[in-house]
Length: 118
Ligand code: FES
Image (cartoon, rainbow, N blue to C red; front, top):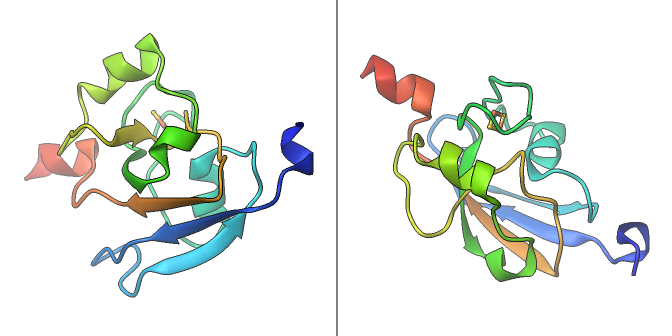
């Protein structure tokens, strides 16, 4: 099935003190980059390399739904090595194409850039 024909994916963003204090839920278009959907809904997630998978500042944790999206490739895995707070559910949101019934997204407390200033 083409992404355009798929039903929307419900995105739930867990509360983050600075970027999204109350949390947020919205419907996203399958096939779009997760980072673009977050930005389009007012979440000012960093994207220092302009979304080409080369900086790790767009790091997120997919707390639910991660199995429905394509797995990280080797390049993404390499970049993730630099992310702050890396765990098994870490992804670069510019490398994730929205897919599936729903995704639960946790924004890390710090980004790679921010952590460097701590
Ligand atoms: S915006 Fe740079 S890795 Fe995603």
